[in-house]
Image 1: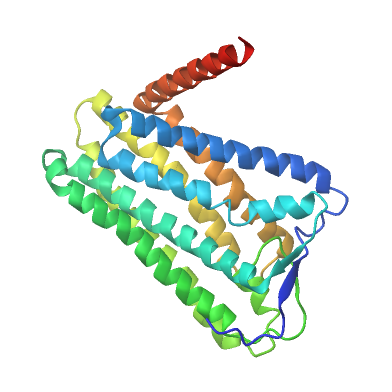
Image 2 (image 1 turned 120 degrees about the vertical axis):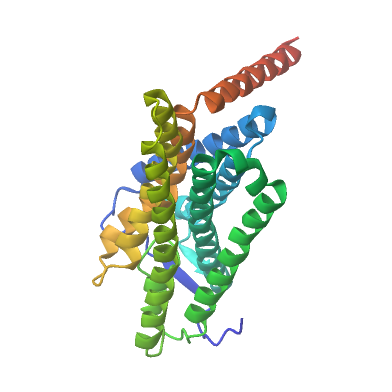
Length: 317
């Protein structure tokens, strides 16, 4: 990507209207970030260590946990760095990287939720053919496909944003580099690019959401045909965690990118929820309502506790 800009670095102004709250926000966000990393790592360990969980549903949940580890890591370390009193400057290349990886991981998650909805659709509507339809090869193709198309979308949006010249103001009125705030700093007319970006950012999640809606419409129809109340309860329970995670993911996207009049403070608040809170809640959503995951998590925690006890005894002996 050719840099046509005279600007070599940008200054992140942070979250609007939070002056003198840096210490409190640092402690709060650091706690959320650490909890997010630990929670998703535990989910990964629980699934990898239990052969009962080596199924397509948990395979995609593993991929979601990997995304939820890296997604907040795009903006949180730099945010925590300047909240601790360090420099707010970010290099031009660093800003490009932030925007690319933010949209790459965000788009990958969007596609992944769609794939997970399709997996639940096949499991509930075609249970006898589930293992044939969702074979290892198909799961691998779907997993690679989510990352591939996420990369394509992110490359397009990043190229669209940084093909513009940045030759004057370099203060980013936000806590990380994102499309709306970067376009405000460009030394060129951005109206056409804003429309293209709006369509691109809006069309992808809308298409995914419609596919998810179609899958769950079919799922609900199939569940209602189950005669046993226990069978209906189990089927709804299987899907409720996924639906909760979908709502938490899509609401911030709509509020940030599809509103006609942006609000910096509201956008920053919603982005904090999207970057830190949702990835932190996903392990809880998928484990608290799932007996198999809870059982495997218990074994992992017991094993980790045993290892910690062994290390302590070795160090004190």
